[in-house]
Length: 245
Ligand SMILES: Nc1ncnc2c1ncn2[C@@H]1O[C@H](COP(=O)(O)OP(=O)(O)OP(=O)(O)O)[C@@H](O)[C@H]1O
Image (cartoon, rainbow, N blue to C red; front, side, top):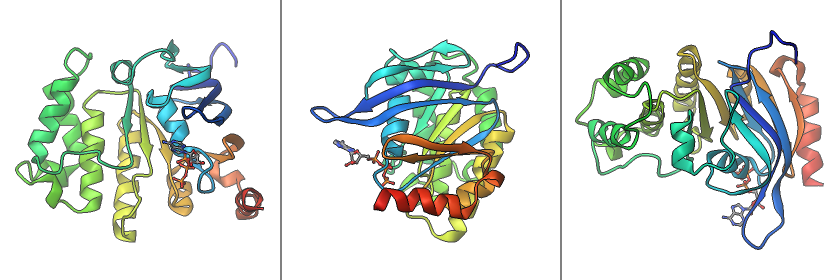
């Protein structure tokens, strides 16, 4: 890296992780993610995408390797301390309290984040400006929102932390095509607001449309990292098919 290159928003070196009593599922992943970009992480079912993102979020303990956010080591930190260090995470499921209103969900997230710099009314206003349909209905129960709107509420809660990096685990899972498009538009707005996004996605076409870089995971290893324009559907078919053989 030259002296002028910006510090990566997220830097991962030799990351290995697995579940208790089992072998490694994340098998030596390294990557540098430039600031204010979207990295789409794709790969066959069971290739370790969710495990990778959980390791970054601190929910799965890393066995080896290092993680830095804007040049600061976070490898040994708890999930909560990682959020405070600028790494926010939206899990695939159970990412909002369905029996609480939009306003209550946002309030809880803010309470949790007390002490993190940049958290407060100005940040909330900026975040809500990204998601007008959430901002318009503060008293709506999260459980009564559409799947797409619920994802936006989950994004909003995570962004209240004023993070440098937002980790999204399959935000379009189970959504109809209309809501897939809306969710992807929301991810673009998040990047435009200055946040770097690591997006795990099963919907390869939708992810490639918005990503600046794509990383293909096969059996817990990085098989490819490139701009989407450099990745052919033949390459992807080979990588996905290779896993199934
Ligand atoms: N809690 C767990 N305990 C033990 N093994 C697990 C656990 N969660 C996932 N695994 C295993 O880890 C491997 C990778 O799973 P993971 O969910 O990370 O893959 P994925 O690429 O996200 O899959 P998908 O695209 O189907 O969501 C699989 O073999 C899975 O069975």
